Amino acid sequence: MGRFNDEESFIFQWNDSVEAEDCLRLNVWTPGPDQTAKRPVMVWLHGGAFSAGSGHDLPAFGGENLSRRGDVVVVTLNHRLNLLGYLDLSAHGDKYAASGNVGMLDIVAALKWVRDNIENFGGDPGRVMIFGQSGGGAKVSTLMGMPAAKGLFHSAAVMSGSFGMVNTTANSHRLTDLFLKELGLDAASVEQLHTLPYDTMQRAGDAVMQRENAPFDGYVDIRKIRNNLSFAPVVDGKVLPAWPFKESAPETSADVPMIIGTTQNEFVTGINNPEAMSMTESALRERVERAYPGRTEAIIAAFRETAPQAKPFELWSRIATAPIRAAAIRQAKVKADLKQAPAYLYEFTWQTPILEGRPMAFHCADIPFAFFNTDRCDTMSGGGADARALSATIADAFIHLARTGDPNHAGLVDWPAYMPATSPTMIFDQDVRVSLNGDEDALETLGDL
Image 1 (cartoon, rainbow, N blue to C red):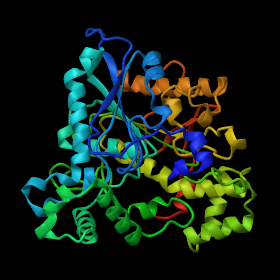
Image 2 (cartoon, one colour):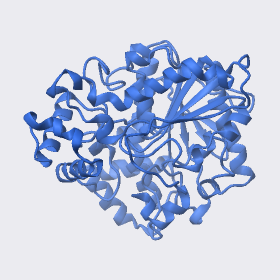
Image 3 (cartoon, one colour):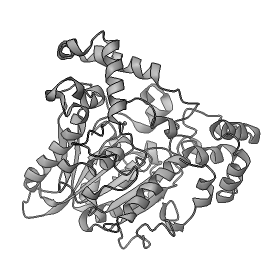
Image 4 (cartoon, one colour):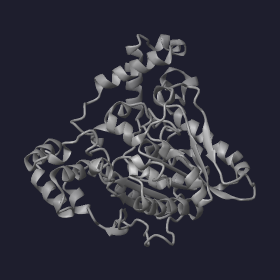
């Protein structure tokens, strides 16, 4: 719904799009088609949970600058989403056995296409990196637990997507049953789905989720997202044997090195809210108490210690965003527990100067930096030399992970692999640096996230 808000439309500059099942397309950027070039390949998975978006709906996804800077091949792609990609009809016959995961299997098909064809674009099918943000990061995490995707990629990056949504069979079947009922269908008439217009089915799915899911209390609370009904991949025991990274990292991709990160302010910013920075201390306490009853003073004190100069709204943003940060740390930890390929953790804290700085380090703010697109996307980054320099540092880290399996490069301070004892985090800001155990104590005050 962001494109209906003036400030969000200005920031993101969304391209027009049409929702349809005929969507299996990909885009390729390459410095040249020399089949002997053996360039690393960077495959981007777009965000929008598992329900919206496309591989080209933001100018930030344009791959030309990244391809030229890193001498790499960049691929973006589309796949089936929402009910077209994740309506689980497996209880209604063998031909629907994989129906709850066909959106993810589309991505596997795209990766197989890359394996079989990317040499024609100068790419190396033996050095494929998958990376994605938000829902795209969740797709990366899901692929890491899918046997069908094993060997199709060799490094990975999850940006603000470690809290990814995966359905249990019980949840996916419940959503399907409610969806069929909304349409006036049952097990005996399920075949009628093949004759219904997409718009009719979409309205039914939206109606079910709006009725069944708990509303958000003024901000996106990922603790509620996990429990809400949604069209998302399902743990079916075959296509997706287990929930990747929920309890442990998947052995299937134990040899895949990762970058894992978040932005500092994610969904809780001053976008569309010119009065955000006028929040009072009492309003801050009221917000924290509603979110974490009985722990308000301890939480505020702990987070204020990490940011002594923060205004009340800035502090609330960090507190409200903390579960997303905690999910990234947890993903890095279980990856490190495998003691095989490393994980590298970051936090993007660059405060954009646009709209008087109100958007802060917002959800998606790091995308143009990773794509070396800060000048092209100056409505997100503010443009200019400082943003361009930070973008070079970040983009080169992603490029080096794709090329070597290690994000370290000459323009970056040493980025240690994640270790639970010290929780090293690369801070991407005007002053790029490594933080050790920077927010562990504050996160602990929030309890079990």
